[in-house]
Length: 298
Image (cartoon, rainbow, N blue to C red):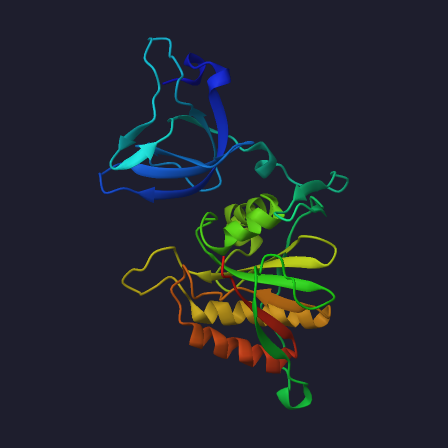
């Protein structure tokens, strides 16, 4: 099917949020977020669809030039709510941000607006100087209820920390809470960093710092190798998380910020929280930072 064969009024541009293989060989379930609409899913045989792409989808009810009609139907046990026509180049994601670009206004779930400056991210240094713990006042860990993406607790500057994978996938887990609260810009910058690769220091253990507002930053720690459990066990990489947290907490201490997070590494990454907690405790002693760990009850 060609794009020119379809009435433009019956198509929609959607951002891909997740892609998963189905039991039926060669079929993939693609979940997406259309511009200005509710999330939807389609089943396709295209294997070149990845998270973050913008695709063109034909909606049910469309009458094609050959008089056939697009319908909502089941394929391989999953509902397909349209037909994928083509991959569309994502304009905003491929543009290089420059000084003078106007800020983006994003509206959170609570209805308030945040001005997010369209600026390049920074990658935190991973070589951290050794600190004499005996001369450092220990920080603390607080377990609290709520949504870590909103960082409700504490005062002053805050850094939201999360663990990301090294495949450029942004479509499941806590990243969706970040998108819901802060809009699509953080996900686009993460994928931009991944696309730039080693040239932009994208690697396990490295940290991307993104400005969300005047008082809140987001730290994307690359602490997950892949997205599935394999012969090497679950995707979590504790050493990478430790190196990343060291950089985050060093930076937090330098700007007098607290650190906020869900139970990083213990969700989709498949890690053991007890091991992550030991790393956090070491960081509070080394950098004298306050860390808030959020339990989200939905």
